[in-house]
Amino acid sequence: MDRLKGKIALITGGGSGIGRATCLLFAGEGATVVVADYVAEGGHETVQQIKANGGKATFVQADVSKSADVQNMIATTVQTCGRVDVLFNNAGIEGPSAKIANYKEDDWDRVIAIDLTSVYLGMKYVIPEMLKQGGGSIISTASVAGLVGFPGSGAYAAAKAGVINMTRMVALEYADKNIRVNCICPGIIDTPMVDRVVGGRLRERVVKAEPVGRLGRPEDIANAALFLASDDSSFATGAPFVIDGGYVAR
Ligand SMILES: NC(=O)c1ccc[n+]([C@@H]2O[C@H](COP(=O)([O-])OP(=O)(O)OC[C@H]3O[C@@H](n4cnc5c(N)ncnc54)[C@H](O)[C@@H]3O)[C@@H](O)[C@H]2O)c1
Image (cartoon, rainbow, N blue to C red; front, side):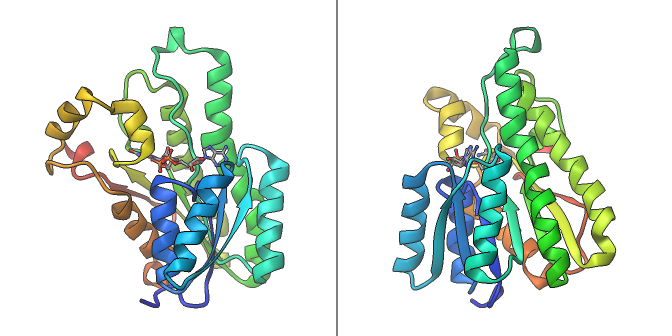
């Protein structure tokens, strides 16, 4: 119940899917949650759900690909809550599916900005705060698409592989400052994003191909994020945590 008692957690993409499940779990574990999203409706709905359960949360609107928004989201968290113990860089988009020769340059730039540059911006602007307060935990959502080949995923796979190696690099840069940096590599998780990519009849085929016979649930990833946000993971840094129902083990 109280694994995050007294902690302040800023979670991007908190208005849907994995982000919302994590916001709800963290608040239930005693954290004050700052829900960030560029879609205000989803973000406010998450805050309402947390409050209805007796938790503490506020919403801040931010496009995580924009430096000014990221700076504002972190400054607002520190102003309203006094500190930021956990940053979960989770917001992301899937982008189009196309072989690389057909992958449009505009799409490449947009997906890299939202899925990779956002993680750089989040780390760049939260680390000075974490240094001031004596530590913190940074978690990012990468993907199994950053570990194995996913034909047609274009900039998405490149961005997620970038997140994984940036996690290792930044973890080593700040390991002696009590700032832990980890990422999660989800397999296929049943969220609105996956509905868009493998909805309809394709979904049945995808479920059949899963080693554990089901898609992941947003809560499966939220539980991993809880471990990484809490002091239970005090010896974990620089690592990609694969939570995929055996997907990459095949
Ligand atoms: N669902 C999966 O199978 C899966 C697998 C691996 C990794 N992931 C990653 O998990 C993360 C969450 O995905 P999800 O499945 O919950 O998707 P989702 O579409 O349900 O939620 C994504 C959220 O991010 C927000 N968002 C998107 N772009 C944003 C931006 N520029 N600024 C602020 N917010 C923005 C959206 O508004 C939405 O609320 C993403 O990084 C995704 O790449 C998902």
